[in-house]
Image 1 (cartoon, rainbow, N blue to C red):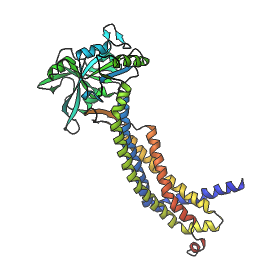
Image 2 (image 1 turned 180 degrees about the vertical axis):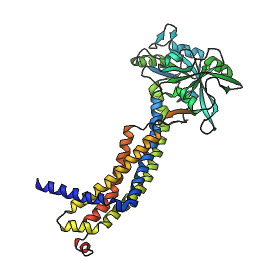
Image 3 (image 1 turned 60 degrees about the vertical axis):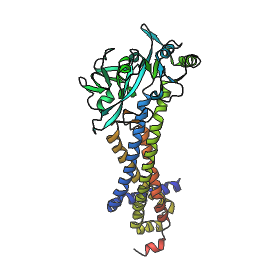
Image 4 (image 1 turned 90 degrees about the vertical axis):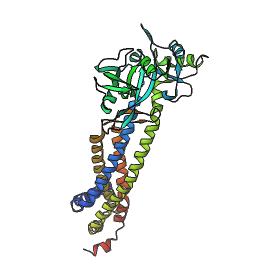
Length: 399
């Protein structure tokens, strides 16, 4: 045991000397730490956008809920049904029912322009026409201010996310729909799902405003249980009167989030990678400076019997300590600056805004620390090898 203990003692001693010399190298050390902190903050911050968007989309569906679209449609915008189709869908087996009838809501989806609160620029905001069953189909629906719209009236209720991001959506205000101004009578929450990005009104009123006749674009349904989905789907897809695509709402919204999350994740990793290259060079410069400043010290220790292995490990440990410090600072900045930040972005499949909150998760923080560790390892490796190969005699002549 003497050998390993002695080796660890040597590593600890050399590392201690290196850390104590940091104040003499504070400029280069600070640059390296700040560079690594910047990489981690940017990486975690950008990826928290993708995580927040995905979480919003995931919260939009339930295991016992399904959506019915026209066959071949990948979003409500390109789907369409007539009233007889929606009645057939509502009579399908596996569908849950209340004392008022089947829990199926035929819905219409249009886009209106509203200014953003932050910039004043117009953005596409989804306006959804729903039937009375829509409130029962979505378990998490809850009016948080005001009341529901009255069927047959030009009234709207607004998702809590849309109310926070777009102007003039407070209860009592009016928004322009077509040629008319409709009053906002309520604000609702929907468990953090995409419905909170929408404005709702009576489907029959919206049909008349946009001259859609008695047509719809989708049917949202609630099933008896998650296991009833296959029965429901088979009944509809085998019915010769219909030409439909049936999906679990969870699967539908997962598909809707794919394009945006891939784009954000790719851009985040690309930007962070470019910054990481700079941070690696910063770490290399810092550790080369450390080795250069401690040439005589390292040579003296080597002459006293300290092995080259302990020198390599000590320089690597010092680099890791600085990297982890930078990673912790960057992760802290990302959490404080981004976690819970509310914003809106375009859902490319519906061409409308989706409001969501950035989510800085523990997994993202760990990912940031891993990046910092890798930067520290790369930044410390070559200076550590240089330190181990210093000619002892040449270095001692400088004493």
